[in-house]
Image 1: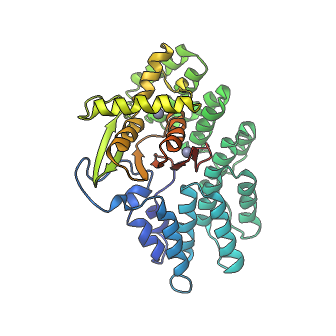
Image 2: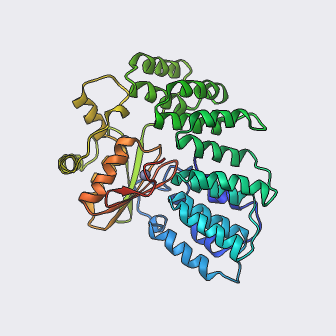
Length: 378
Ligand SMILES: [Zn+2]
Ligand SMILES: [Zn+2]
């Protein structure tokens, strides 16, 4: 499930904390629900100051706040920040420190953040234990948020039948977030039967949301069922549902540049294409294989590869690489990153020796030396 804004998590609670101030000053970058940068291609400063180091800096500031104004809000925000960046184990360690060493009582928000952190790091056993702990140790009855996190955690780990059983036994009707998590997991684990089941509920609950149609069509395409994929696209058209085009943003020299999927109009397009070609040659030598199942149309493999080249995050990355010699690049994507771009980014981080931090509308990905912080689990 997508992360909620840190603001939304925290404003209803009392207390102002140092770490909260630090994180929220970069709220636009941190909030995956917030997909458009503040000022397009115009110069600005500040927002992008929150780089990968921000999580470490936040922790330093958090540690300095001992005995001052550290309350449940600051614990919760720090745990959420770890979770969003894929540091699930750190989130759990902090929770232990909070409860065992400092005797702070967790609340519902703490458990939502912890379960999300477990989900985004694939920590299934730990997540299930926390769900029990919440009820047994702290007498907190889980609400929809924690149930949604559990569904996400279980489904992502591939326990799809168990997840469906869990949903059916919930004390309330599942909402769109819950069915959406199951559908998302069906894409990862290519379970068509379950995907169709989840999609039936989603098409009823949120008929206007393009993401559900795309996910289901994607699963059909991955299985070579082109007619079914095209049927879903027709259904979208009939219902007047439009898909927002993939768009990515990158900052170079204190200016933000935007790239739309398949865009060939950028003034540096020739250099970007040349860089892409040389990157593809290099990463293919290292073992990268284009994952053409992320192309929804039925066409020749070579044509599919060309479509994959045009994904906005790849264009943004190639532009970043030719424009700056810095050791890290930060990209924002308005939609969930596709599996092919994710794989390419890993290889590129290794061959170019750059840290690539991407925030899509679900989470952060830190690509370093061929590995992503999400552990390929998003
Ligand atoms: Zn892609
Ligand atoms: Zn990742």
